Length: 90
Image (spheres, rainbow, N blue to C red):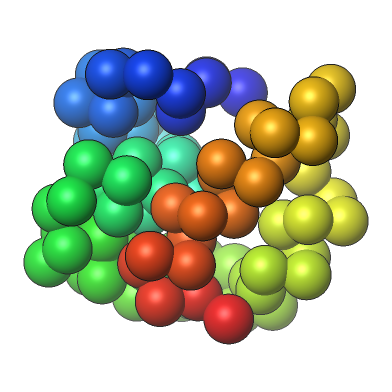
């Protein structure tokens, strides 16, 4: 899973968009696009990405992300969750 720390948001957005161009049902790319756009302050993109994520993964929630996504470090999990919170996921 790509790291969303530091200044890599634009690269995460670019790679997610490319992945979605090739396979529009790639849920992981929807998740990364949503969180990265929100953390980059691209609110409109984050909201649109979240809407598409909800179509691709209707059961998505902060609880799901926290419990199902593999992270070695708790800080990385919290950073990822922060992106989803900023995008409007509950």
